[in-house]
Length: 192
Ligand SMILES: Nc1ncnc2c1ncn2[C@@H]1O[C@H](COP(=O)(O)OP(=O)(O)OP(=O)(O)O)[C@@H](O)[C@H]1O
Ligand SMILES: [Mg+2]
Image 1 (cartoon, rainbow, N blue to C red):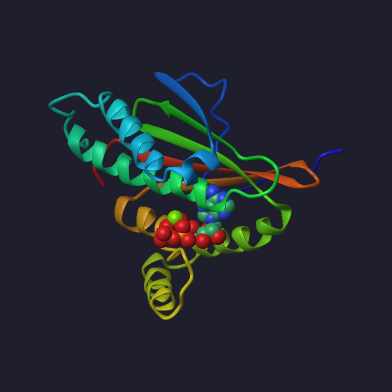
Image 2: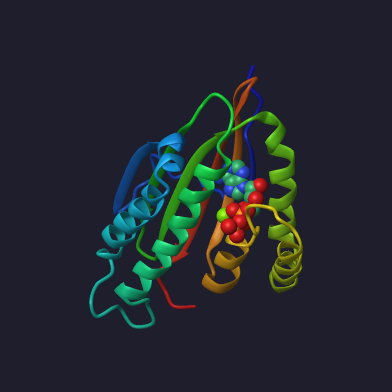
């Protein structure tokens, strides 16, 4: 029997719940790494598409359409790139899903990793969700300046710290050789 998924942070089961709009797209991680600009193309497309939900002028106290597009483009590029960079194991499918609600949009990207990748990522997630964001950010900045590691490890921290995005994470075992990693980003439509 498969074990229960492990969730962290702000994870919600959104499929099957009422929403104003729901969108999905499937990609292959290998196709993203083959042409890296597929990450930015996908994020630009979806950020523009989703920002059209924001009325002009915006409701009082809410983000403007151009601000929303900017935030989403940055967020989605980060999420698509992470899927491309960190997918591993036999499954290379990447699933994009998004939901529009009255006061927020939620984006969920799913990729797959080898089982050995779960524990270190989960430890990092727990640190990000419980630690002081400013402190972690500067620690990470210093560490990345001193190392040759490919990622700087600042992606999620920047999105939480500077854009107020709330994250949820879910690990689900698919087979003995594969774990599905779900990353959910909750973006408030109000200015913060
Ligand atoms: N979708 C994912 N699947 C598997 N592991 C992930 C995923 N996203 C992030 N990780 C792990 O979490 C770490 C932190 O991710 P984050 O996006 O914050 O930084 P980064 O991608 O390493 O660097 P940067 O985003 O600053 O270029 C990654 O280095 C990776 O180990
Ligand atoms: Mg990243």
